[in-house]
Amino acid sequence: MPSASTLRVQIEHALERRFPAALTPVPHTVPETAPTGIARLDRLLDGGLPVGAISEVAGPESSGRTSLALSFLAGRTREGLVCAWVDAGDALDAESAAASGVDLRQLLWVRCRGVGPIAHGPDRAQPWPRLDQALRATDLLLQAGGFAALVLDLGGTAPEHGARIPLATWFRFRQAAAQTRCSLLVLAREPLAQSSAEVVLECAPLAGLAGGGTVLSGLHYEVRIYRQRFMSATAGLRKPPASTWQATGAWQREERGSQQHGAPSGRFSLDGVGKQVFVAGMRIRA
Image 1: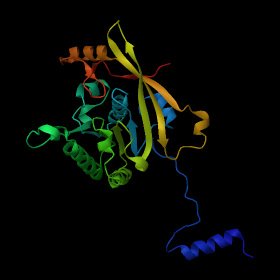
Image 2: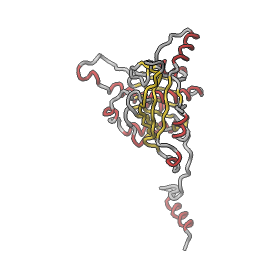
Image 3: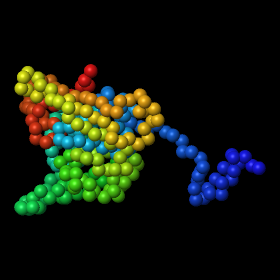
Image 4: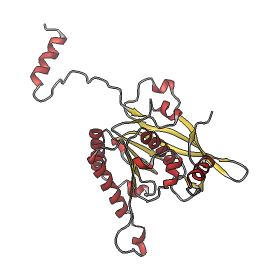
């Protein structure tokens, strides 16, 4: 009677035209990651966000999702890499991005705006033109290549509208990101990409940081892994399910730099929702 190895070779030889290496295990490779700039989160993610894949950061307004994305882009642009920000709600504050360390010379900002005559009545809040612009721009940039990271900001899109994005769109984005080695980071109120996302993070605000009485100097956040593909088998034994971090106010440093360069100083908005708070560099709570 032939041995098991001989039978395996015979079966693979019979099926090699239809199923190459049908019984040979696929070699396990360590996925490439890029650090977020937040030490505790990088340890939680085995090094950072995956390269050539979709990552989702979900949470309500002022939950830290935009600050996390800016910290990630700051590290990428600091290395001289070109990144893009597709802004479906036209809510990104360039001063906040610069204060967080993002090199604006390395950042392409796509601002999605309404076109045509101003709508009245129920159609006034119609999100589809901007959402369609954002999806088309993301597809174009991913297919073009050359971007190390791309942020698709859907934070201002209602979850019921984002849920209607076809799954085929996310499959197309995942394939394009893998081919161009681009880290696609999706910001939304709830997870949208479903099985196409390599990792899904959930952010939540914990408390405000007061400096000098009534001055809001920053916010404290919690982030946990909602879903992660290809997580190591021992990850749950040596890592906490969630981590905390905080965005502290570096507006004084920014003000000093602005005075030296003759640029106007001002406040910076967090999460692009119009709240005027002081936000900049990231620091992990001890």
